Length: 309
Image 1 (cartoon, rainbow, N blue to C red):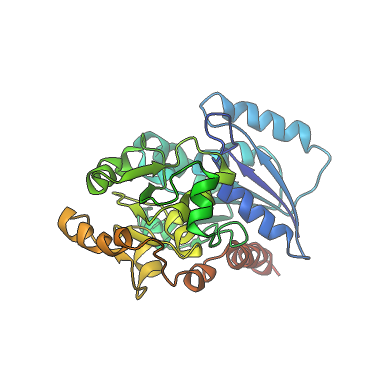
Image 2: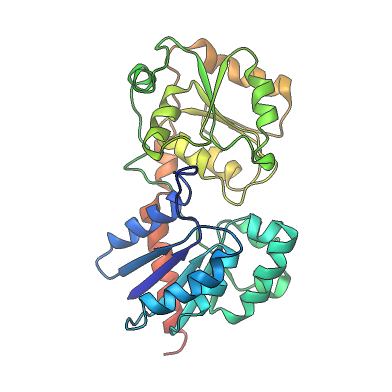
């Protein structure tokens, strides 16, 4: 199976971690012997899409791919500029929820052989005729990168006070749906770390440096930040959106509930009181690893050809 993955989430100096989950999925696919995967990334922005279509045609004019798989709804359009037996798209959230982006995304979907979403809850937001033929193909957590690190060592590596405490808001504070205002209210006097422009190789350090990770989002396409915290055995509090309820069910020291300051503060108290709080989360995160999810992607690709045999 030869595949080309197309992503509009190329990293930049301002957003160095953008699209890392797509690159993790590509890396996991490349670990499968039966797959040959090429990755084409470009920067987001309205002017980028026609340029990406031209670049794809120019760069891969002499190549033959079995599948061209786009990540993010708008990316389906330049991906369709490259001929291939099968075209696939994975939808991630804002491509379905943003009014203008949704309209452009939905116009592309009938032209594709498979439409995937990162969660069943996101699939439910699609028109019925599309949702009924949607695969669930999240990217998964890179277990080799997200792992427990001694908390004091993580703090010292980031130039933080080894004694703490710290909390982590694992997103850019400017993204309104992530609800940084709630995390800031909950943190109070405790220093609240954020990812924002943090270098990708510091993200695992930031998770391990925190007493707990706060994910009080209004909405999530999937909820990878929760899985990354669990992979590091770090306590996490999250609203019941995306994958959060399934990921956190039954794990002591975590909370999945609608945001209420009093309830969340009570749940957070134990993590703040302990010098090195940990939860038993890595096993659960492994169920959603990038390797597990890459196998699902390959199965979905292969099913497209099995249907015609």
